[in-house]
Image 1: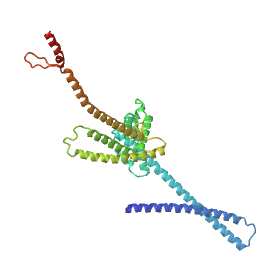
Image 2: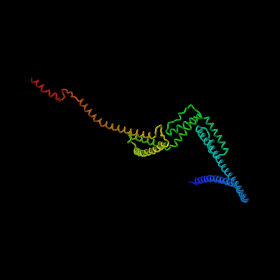
Image 3: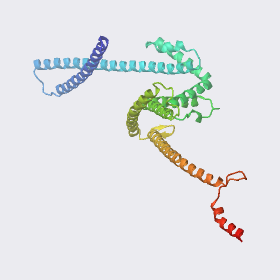
Image 4: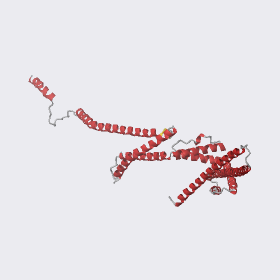
Length: 364
């Protein structure tokens, strides 16, 4: 911590101590004044006529007491005036701060549509709370409001565009189109600006969830891409060290992805317990979407396993069936050759069986 920070802390402590002492001083004045009033009442209740010296002393005491009460009353009034002046000064400063803030917001929206409001923006940065600066701020605010009224349609389109951009960041469906596009008035612009502010607040309040989910989507997409690349038939050809790098990347993803999903689950559960509503991504609960991704992933893996087993079974059955069918076709197509007179005779069993009958016919 630097010297500047230490001096700031010391000054703040002194100011706080001074305020506490002032408060105690005011309380002490009130106590003294009450006691003085009580004593004055007690002195006035004495009925007996005392001797002259005692009466003179009592009169002097009453006079001193009256002076004391006057002094205490005046001091108490000064303290009240100080407090009142301090409140008025605080109210004055607050009014100037509100004017600066409103002028700054209007000037920023006007600058987005190309209107030069640099002078107004510089005026908002001036921390001068004098009457002159108040008048300048008032004139700048009136000028911004006039420019806003003159450029309502352009501002409405600009706010719609910003809402859609922030909806992309918050993973929500754009809702700016729900309003009538042909409507162009101050009320519509105010509603759109409120929606834009709410969307920004929603994103900034849950930035850690959105950033983790974005990391998770990138890791998931890369994991799927690596697995698809591993299925390519030529993955082993001319890859150099790519296979080793991909394998290392797959291992890194297998470690980081569960960690991110665990952190994301804890943050989303804390959000749902705090707000009593689900955390949605494109209209779907974010944890349910993650679970669906894993279910689809496992289902696709099972289908690939079944397809590989079926392909392996078919590859085993096909050669045997083809050999069997080829043997049958050979038997069907094999026939007795045609012989002419010069061909060596091949006797078939049927011819051998019929030969004795022919010899008996010749002997007859």
